[in-house]
Image (cartoon, rainbow, N blue to C red):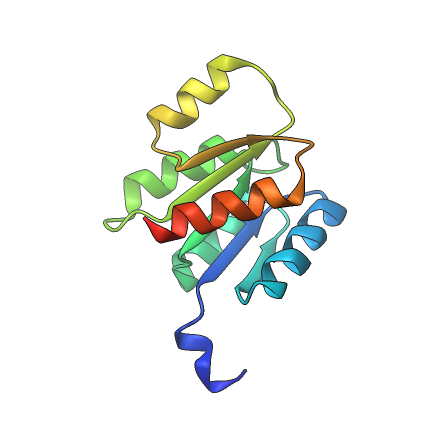
Length: 127
């Protein structure tokens, strides 16, 4: 790790699809973010607790613990709520409304162009 890790924004990707997670990681690292990946909700939650990332990119449908369960737990346990971008292949509005009710900062439907994700990451972290 280099010395300027402290100043770099930390992003935690929680997604069980290795190709999607890896492509997001590559794109975000190219923009100077420090990126970690968790493959399921339980690992994502543990990493969020331990690492306190600036932003989580959270998939809705995952094994072990869904994105919604991760989000609900984070909102109940974190006094300083982490910024969250939820990504999902689900196109139902009910899920989007619930995610917004839980306070997600952005909601993106898969498949999405990488620049849409990167624009949302920049916007959410600038808030």
